[in-house]
Image (cartoon, rainbow, N blue to C red; front, side, top):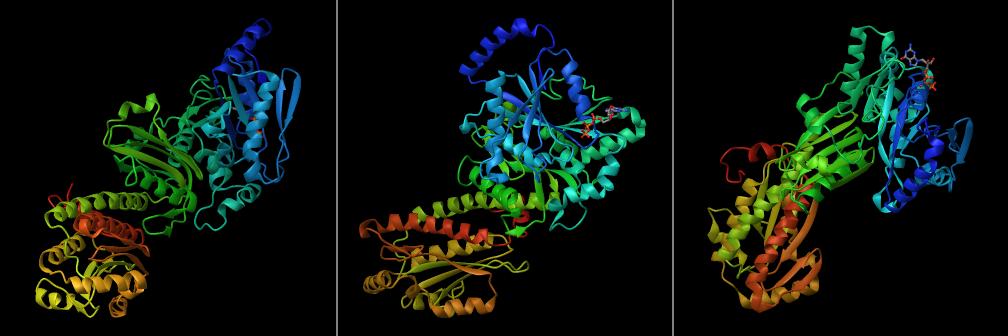
Length: 589
Ligand SMILES: Nc1nc2c(ncn2[C@@H]2O[C@H](COP(=O)(O)OP(=O)(O)OP(=O)(O)O)[C@@H](O)[C@H]2O)c(=O)[nH]1
């Protein structure tokens, strides 16, 4: 229904029109609130209450049936006084995922053009609708210049029937969420779960029909499913006020009480859905920080996968919110519903805690194991900080000992194993048949003149520290002790530049390593040739001989970086964090 203030609407209409024109020029956006609730929860009662209340707001109440995916050729039905206006959705090619998004928004926008502007839009869904399918349709990218924006999702629940709906859904209801449950083991989801898990506000209605204890049980259950939503209790849907309950929720442009929830912790009361909170350190605004988080979020939200291990988690994300401080003092907020998520600059309300060094991410969904999620996030992010320390460490070393004499060749290969119990190892072998150790530098030297050095890294469950140590030792040894053999180097360079990577890789070494330990994959990363040629990802670069030492040092750093990044993307870093956290360790923060 298109609801005027209820008083003086005619007199005010010209003023409204002027206001509306003004707002057009300033591009004020109209908030849209999705009101959902299981059959009989009290949605119509709520809408009737709103239409009769004297609130002085122009609210359009729109009935929609997007949730009924079997029949999406629906109109938006808008009641204006006694008149009923229908706005048909113009669906493009009939594919709901491609066309409804814009069609739904367009329909509302064209409605506003025809009917004049509103201050607010309430979109009432059918009782069986899954708001997780609807909310993303109205969460419109700023760039699309829409005149509406998603303000939030309000879910009404029936205090008397909620627990039964959650625990003992009817056959019809089970049928409705069949798709959701396909491929999932464990407790099944119900429509009531979906409606609560996606809510920004939950209104527990029909409280006159339950005892105080029953009401408490309902509230506790709702909170266990969705720890972030604001909760209100009503009789006959008489909400205490519209602002903050139905209107002006800003649930998608601010993150609200993420910290408040984090302090309360999570509960496993509901077997299917829960809310978990993750800690996240301040991140750099770049490749090793925010972009890395972005990649991890793509993994969990898009693929249902933990990026650190590549493991498919058997979980679904319904809603995700977060406050992420950056090391430069700025603050980002994370918002997401199902597969859609966004990392944006915080608005003023959210910047209050911007100086914090720790952020929070709250996730609502199915099959969430808080410890597993935290570990995945930590591991994924920690790799970045570890890399920085690695580079610092090698960076200090490199200028002291310019890598003048890289020898006939230095090749890096990363081998990643997914074995849990495997250890981190560094083999710096010559000809693949000999391993250099600190105890036998002489034999290493002897052979080094004859063949390219081969560095083989096994990065497994153990921390990098030993590996880094070994790597430093190796680089030191190469740069300090190994004499240059100009003739040999030139010859080798030409041969390699022409022959490509394979001539550099000694088959013996590869065999040896593979036999020692089964590996998940072998990743040739790069090769540096001592006389100024470098092979990076099969690409040959010939460096200027005069600047060899300087450039080679830089190149080695870059190679190390790639090497470790490539390796850690594929390995299981069990135990890695524990070691980093040891106070006073060589790489302790
Ligand atoms: N006792 C009691 N009855 C209520 C309350 N709220 C709504 N009702 C009644 O419950 C019934 C269902 O309410 P509706 O508002 O039609 O519920 P709905 O969510 O729109 O239902 P559907 O359109 O079927 O999805 C109506 O008979 C209402 O009068 C309440 O707080 N207490």
